[in-house]
Image 1 (tube, rainbow, N blue to C red):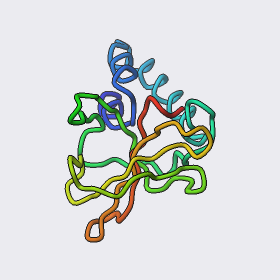
Image 2 (image 1 turned 180 degrees about the horizontal axis):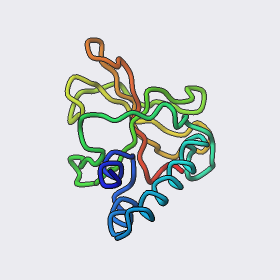
Image 3 (image 1 turned 90 degrees about the vertical axis):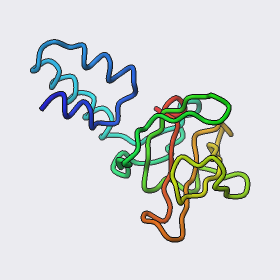
Image 4 (image 1 turned 180 degrees about the vertical axis):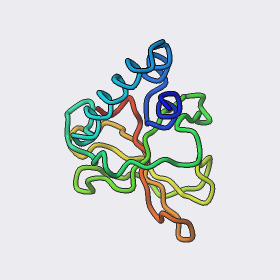
Length: 142
């Protein structure tokens, strides 16, 4: 069960690797419980300025892996949310489906409304559910 849980919780690659190296099931479950308590009791904030961007309760699992590579070769680990604090983010550019990681969805770049740091993307679709969701870059949030 602890390995299944470790595979389905939204951990970064480094967090997952460290957790899977724990050789005691009880200790592994304790580490997972501690991580869950730390990450579900608070909101998701911009790493740079700590502005609240979203709620942990809005995290959801896509059917695709959370690690993606853009055409420039940059690797992004993203956390998907049903909603964000709309008054705390700014979406820039026209929505495009070019190089989208989620077939059927267009995307726009998203920045923190306080410090202007890039924090992820807004995804939208008129025919798929959810109609809108957000992908926050793990290195841009805390």
